[in-house]
Length: 373
Ligand SMILES: Nc1ncnc2c1ncn2[C@@H]1O[C@H](COP(=O)(O)OP(=O)(O)OP(=O)(O)O)[C@@H](O)[C@H]1O
Ligand SMILES: CC(=O)N[C@H]1[C@@H]2OC[C@@H](O2)[C@@H](O)[C@@H]1O[C@H](C)C(=O)O
Image: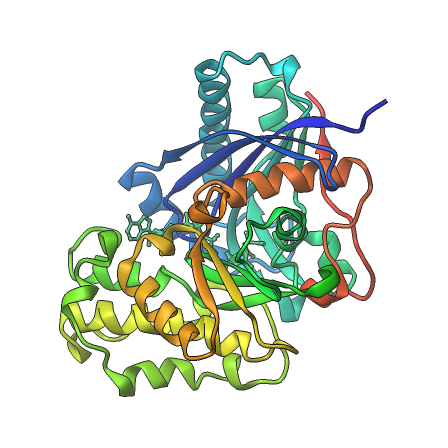
């Protein structure tokens, strides 16, 4: 009997721009068949509610606390995921009974690894009852109970993808996800894994654009491409203890703040923050035991031309190649959602989601809670 399962992965990331949905058929190990994927953007109003809720989340001290607006928001967020799943099933002519499980990330509203506290809003039981599909959720907590950072979790999936790298991508290969926050996974010769968060990704750029009334992101990096890097401000970010400390740790959105509006012009700010996003990745990669030969970039940040050109220039100096995940045979938009489907299957099979070399946990750890319809 095969261990193959058909799973839907759902990711609502730190950019808070919407829900990514992907279908994956996998054994949770080396067999991966990628299915369709879509994104369901949040309305401006819902996005604003998520952002406002980050403030209420700061007073959480126990995992079950839902102060202020959080309880109602968790329900609404879950119902949006219900709509996302049901629309997806309809669009691809699938029935709930044809899906073995959903891997549900939810929305991180607080992440304090030093307090072993991480909160992802999302009601797994409600999602299961409203879709008729078993749901595996809350996949970060068990890692923290074993001394881990609770993030990143995508490395187990990166490791499986690295089994099928196209020719020309030499190891060590580093998978980089440039979302609101960026994280990297280095896969060395023989499959050795090292992973950690690598710095601010798009979140500062997004906040900078919003502050200037220029929408929620710098589309294509078009504004950044007309600006110049302010080296003093860039160094202020890059000299942060996060990069200089010998210890790697995971990040919360609140760890870095946007520059003050009057510090730079719109274009120089967009360019400087794109440079910071790129340089942060290289600076974090300098803590790896051996120099990477290739970087495979996923996440929305790969669509920002300024980030990508800064990254390519910096990597070239170290004789490394930078490749968009889409050009390496992967799907740079769906990779996180695919990962949550993959991790759900691993969770079901009791396989580790994290390792000492990915989150700093004290042993390989599985995790996740299952909610049945
Ligand atoms: N066309 C584009 N041009 C420039 N930037 C873009 C474009 N599309 C998306 N982005 C950036 O990517 C972000 C979304 O990226 P992504 O969906 O990978 O993040 P996330 O999954 O929410 O975050 P995380 O991985 O930290 O959880 C947007 O907020 C925006 O900054
Ligand atoms: C606590 C949390 O939600 N962390 C996210 C965030 O967004 C990117 C980076 O920081 C990563 O550590 C993680 O998400 C990815 C998907 C992960 O766990 O692999």
